[in-house]
Length: 119
Image (cartoon, rainbow, N blue to C red; front, side):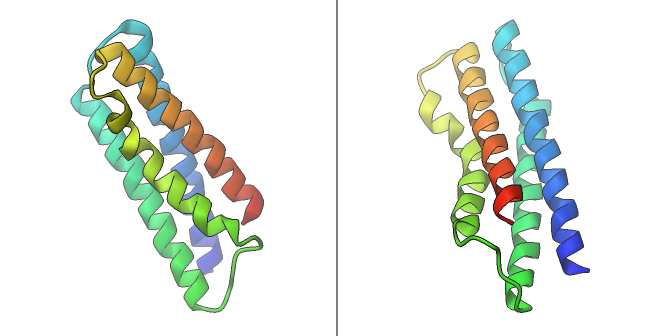
């Protein structure tokens, strides 16, 4: 049961990460600044990854472990990639900030894909 919850939350995390990347890509294409929607999407993506991690910790506490030890490291990378994006675009304009966020979202999507593989 707990592994099904973790898997469901992982799918939600993948979807929210794709939404963040798509929204940031649209902002980069149209050169628009971040809106309240962008901040809510990023917060939702982070919250879904935190919930997935909590379910994963519950799995580990119940005696189940990931098939690959790198699963835990990649979870941290996926969790922090989008929130760390503004650090790399402090002097950029709206298009640059959106592009960096889009790239961070795409990177997080790749890491989430790897998490599905190593789970």
